[in-house]
Amino acid sequence: MNPAEMAPGDARPLSSGLYVVATPIGNLGDITLRALEVLRRVDRIACEDTRQTQKLLNRFGIATPAVSCHEHNERERAVELIEAMKAGARIALVSDAGTPGISDPGNWLVAQAVAAGVAVIPIPGANAALAALVASGLPAAEFHFVGFLPEKSGARRTRLEALLAEIKASGAPRTLVFYEAPHRILATLTDLEAVWGGGSRIVLARELTKVHEEFLRGTVAEVRKELAGREQVRGEFVVLVAAQLRAVSAAHPGENAAPTVAESIARLRAGTGADEKEALKALARERGVSKSELYRELQRERARSKARAKP
Ligand code: SAM
Image 1 (cartoon, rainbow, N blue to C red):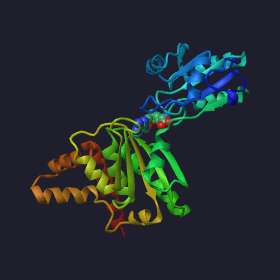
Image 2: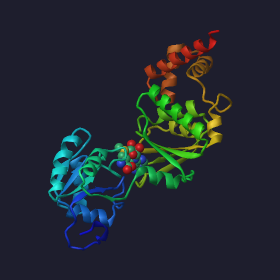
Image 3: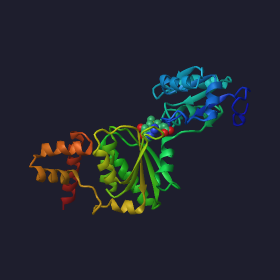
Image 4: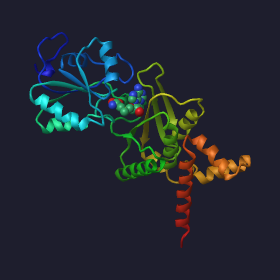
């Protein structure tokens, strides 16, 4: 049966091919009727984590066998799955949550299936980036999905600087969309503030579709302060930044620019009488980064100002 004709209760067998199936990002109600039909009727489900997918299958009484297909075995698994599909098998591909291939495994298998002439059928559904974007209130006509930024602060700032340069060059307003883990969110907001300026308009979408769903809106400085004031930072986050020219110009050194590490250390030392080591420790806590990362940033700042001072 042509998958586009599929309706609930239709008993005709599915056509062979790879079905890329989106699953919920938190709320189990966010699975489509078509997704359930496909998961029920395919021969096998290739999963990022079979235990995670099994919970979803149990919830909907689906008994289709599951096999693992994650970042460490995707390439070998692809060979076997493509052989099976060339021989007429129907395979569904799912990730732990949301749409496979979006900051999740799946791209390799899809590309190999396309190259082998196997039909690839998308079964669309939940995706954290789009859910956050449409409820953010930020411009959605043009957006740039970045995914996860680098884990280390230095590399993260370099990436943010490159994005800023791209926006300045194009001159077109758009919204940037990032994914971030709870243990890095404060550090990422600190870097955003340093590179883009504290006045940039952002939205944090937390725990989308779940009981504690929340949107924090404001300037990056306001949102970071709000989050830093919480006892614990929990949940999954999408970060959206309105990359408008106004925000970009705020990133030039000036009234909106975030203080440098050296400036913040001087402020803490003046206020508390702490020595540099103690001030560095307090600032690391305040910014949600490690002392060593902050120290490396301080060294970079010192090297930059030394280079600027050279005749
Ligand atoms: N493939 C998924 C999708 O389509 O959205 C994304 C998977 S990626 C490994 C996981 C990241 O997505 C999380 O770290 C978080 O940034 C974001 N995310 C996933 N679920 C979310 C939710 N319910 N609320 C907010 N962000 C979420």
